[in-house]
Image 1 (cartoon, helix red, strand yellow):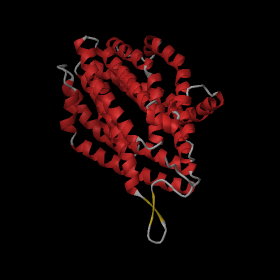
Image 2: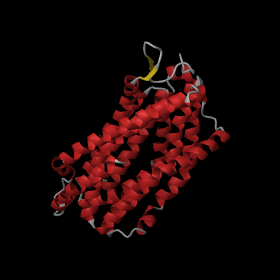
Image 3: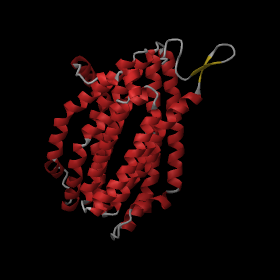
Image 4: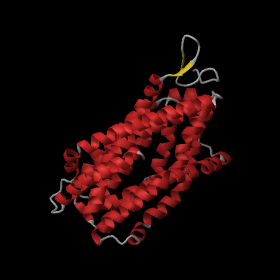
Length: 383
């Protein structure tokens, strides 16, 4: 198996005069499965919103109050899992496949060490939510959703590390197929738990957590398969290496903190909307989930950029890493602007799909959502 060297750079091609150019086709081939994988995550968000929209406007508002708050916790501590991709890509670029696989074990131990914190937050949900002074109905629904989702954060971070490995070594189609499997299972579990078993809001949260657990099993099955074991010795990565784990936290937590700066503001904005009332709380949640189809897929393009930049640095060429990074940023902006405009122009057809209850407030939620969509589109274009 061949690995990157200083003379073989990722996404590079030479013209007839021997001058190096960016191979956009290689970037797109790497990014496309990741683009689709992140797009599947956006579909997962929309699916959850659609099912919860069948419960009540209060349920949509409750999800709106918690969605970005949970996302802030996930991204903040998920920086530990995200940084695994940098370690994997650099090791792979240096021609050290086993070291690339060892980063997964390091990420696993990092997630495991965070588990007690997530358990404490999960069981303290009812007390924490009282601080926001929601209406009694919204507070109860939010509490039902909070605990199962927090209990699943460890699984979500383990999945980040496993995803980082497959992305970092260029096996992005594995990430795509597992993401699709998670999304399909989530649909089945949402219907079964929320409505067939009558678990309602808690059923939506458990559906997500159980789907992520199944995804982790699939990732591990591939990671420990014969081919991966032969090429990366992936079965020999589970002993904790404490200096590396400390380094992972030292780099991953600041990364997560940086990424949550904007999300924290959005989380508190959503909480304030819910405190204003069910209509603004539900409307902002619907709009945020719709616009996730504009920004979530760009995360996949950015992951491809992380892989290419990491491999370039591993191959000893930081200038090429910078050039590829700029190309990936441009691709993200082009997609985000295009998708946002399409959403805004078609909002009147899309919004009613996510408020299918018979509540008397449905018309007000639809009207406010349509007005907010253009504001959200303008914001996300520069996000």
